Length: 440
Picture (cartoon, rainbow, N blue to C red):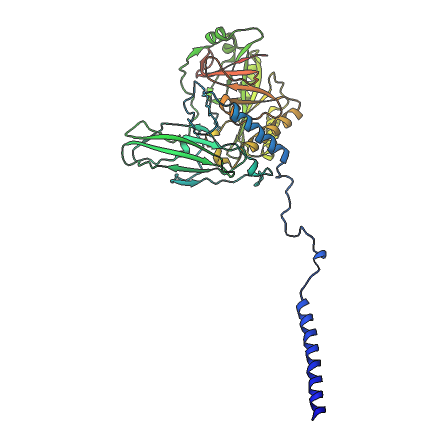
């Protein structure tokens, strides 16, 4: 009996040992040696073409910080400047809105605004994440254009994006919220407050009073048939020259197909020294040549005027800019110019629709500058006082063509040419025309 019990106990012990060994084997099935696994497997790899240089972003942030600190004065000619409750005082000078060959103002891509509207749009080739941390961003988003007292015809749809434009130094998708409502079915005045907020939590706020009226309110722009508008000048070219005469100054006009047929011999006889012509531009994803450019450049040169050109820009990233410069170079075809080629990006009223930040648009100009200079020409930046102070950083220290419609500009930055008005009148041009004074 005892021997039988011993055999049973011995057998059970062997079974336990076998069971333990089995469990150990099972527990190790599927285990892998972590040292054999590449640590970056599954991690997103940087796309070199879309990566954002950290030092560049920090430079942009520092630049806007300086702009915010220095932006303390109002522009006396502003009709759309915002009275903001942020650390930035926004300024808006009146200057020409340069449309493409289609001739109609951009249709906003956003739906009608509700009391809480997060704007969204494609970043169009720009990096989706900036290397600089949002914790390092202390710059408020900005209203770039703003109509404080818009009017809407009764029964029409109210879309706040028709009356403002905004952006941020880093955030490409600034949150926009509205406090208050507008009832376009009932006549009256409706105060609303618009707040911008970026990813870092920085905010900017401004008040708007919308008037619902029976007539005379905002109407979406219709497609233009290209017929030049009748002239209604505020001053003649002779008056302009007399007012701003000085040593080493020359006086000229800038034109596009909106001026229609021009007699440049009469323009020259009126005392004009030069003409800046729109060669073409990039509009709604397509390149175009101004329909009057070929005629203008031949006639203006024949009349003995000095010549410059500008490019109507709407590019969203450096790759688009490079293609634009290739197109520009092909159209220019080696023409000798007397002035730098101007980069004219001015659709700031709809800036939020482009999926860009201020760093992105500055990279576009930097690319334009490099590509144009590589062709053997010189590039410059055209812009109004508002955007020179609130958007552009001019990292290349290129020449600036300032647009500021006032009797005496108070822009403190360097500029080589000043566009003083868009409502000048000169013999040979049947429409109002821009007057410019060059200081070189």
